Each structure stands twice: as C-alpha cells, then as structure tokens.
Image 1 (cartoon, one colour):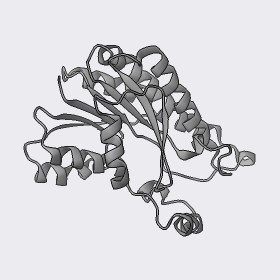
Image 2 (spheres, one colour):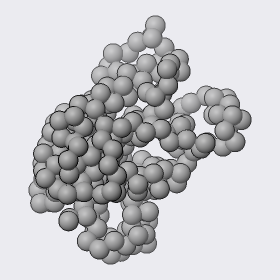
Image 3 (cartoon, helix red, strand yellow):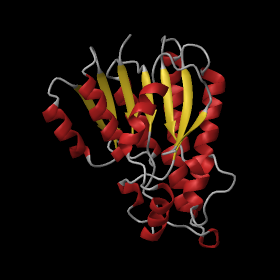
Image 4 (cartoon, one colour):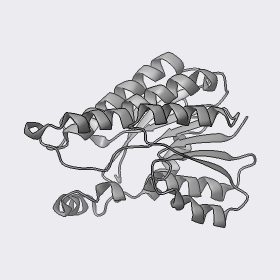
Amino acid sequence: MSNTYLVIGASSDVGSTYIRHLAGKKEEGLCILAHCFGRPEKFDAIKTEFPELDIRVFKADLSDLSETEKLIKDIRDTGRVPEKFLFLPAPAFSYMRLKDLDNSRVEESFRIQAESFLMLASEFFPDMKKTEGARALVMLTKYVADDLPPKFMTDYIVAKYALLGAMKAAAAEYGGGKLMINGISPDMMDTSFLKNMDPRIKEMAVYQKGRLMTPEDLVEVFDEMLSSGYAENGENRCATLG
C-alpha cells in the first residue's frame, strides 16, 4: 500500500490543517502530493516542523484548463498512485445576486471545482480503483444538503451542486469496490474563505451554534472517511457542531 495522499487545494486553511495532522501521525511511507493555487509558504512551517515528511508541492490555477492538465502531468511524473484523494478547492466567497449575474465568475467557479475534479478523477480514479483501501473525499457545503440555500451566492451554489453531481457520477462509475468516493458538507467554518462575507452573518451563526466550525473540527471526520474501513460510497455526509 503506497500511503500517498493527493490533496487538491492543500494551501487552504482546511488543507494545511489536515496535512499538519497527517505529518504529526508519522505514518510509515507517507507521501503528500499537495496542490496549491497560492500561498505555498503555508507549507514552510510544516516542512520545518516535520523535516522527514515527503511533501511535494504543485502550483496550478484550476480555472485554467492548461494548468490543470499540466498539474495532472506533473503528478503523474512522480510515479506515485494516490491511495487517498482529498479535493478542497473553491474560489474565495463573494456575493452575487442573480439579477447581477456574472457568467465569467460562474464559469470560473465551475472550472475550479466541478471541471477540475472531473479531469483529476478521470485520470487517477481508474488506478485508484485497483488499490485496496483507496478513498476519495470531496469538500461540498451544507447548502447542498439543505432544502434551500441562502440568497446571493449564485456562482458558489451552482458550482457546489455541479461538484455534488460530479462526485455522485464518479462514485457510480468507479466506487463501491476497492475505492470509495464520498463528499462532506460542513457547516460554516471560520476560515479565510469567508473574508468577504458580511460579519453580521457570521455573528448570527455564532449566536445559533455558540461558535463557528474550524478546520480542526474536520480532522477526525476526514480520518474516518479516508480510512480503509469506511464502507460508504456516493454519500454526502453533513458535518456540524451538533
């Protein structure tokens, strides 16, 4: 078993938190293939703290088809077949009313999430399907589990529903044997993704829940859903504070 993790969107707050967690476990043969769009310096502290960690960083803009294709080639050139696949990327949150529709933003969000996932899945899932205990996990949002999402989030909601469909399609075609493919839909989290959100909305969520979720709240759930014993396939699992 290769013990290779492919983390797309690794420089996000959630990605870097989970990579630090994996490094701290000091599992034998661990190799992390970490994609980032920006902020590669987020890995510097992890490399300093865990100098023995085999982490290989790949920078690519997933909104650019040619860069996604190059990312796939660069990962292939490592000769590593991922055993675990974690997909986290999303553009920073920004409001969009339907009456102010910006097609370019909708298309960009779709490319970064649904299209890049499909490209990566079509490249790596056929080999992962042959690997015992292989697991893939896709970051969705609680809004695709709710009956009705919030207003003024057109590009984000459309892309997340597309990603949910892409995950389900991949699970139907490649999952259910050695490879299990699932999604996770967390509550609102206190990350840099929300930097453009009206602070009153975050305050309301804190009032309702006591606090916002943090990336640390997802670590154990990620461990469980990426473990070789996790037997669900095509699931969209909600993650909340209770």
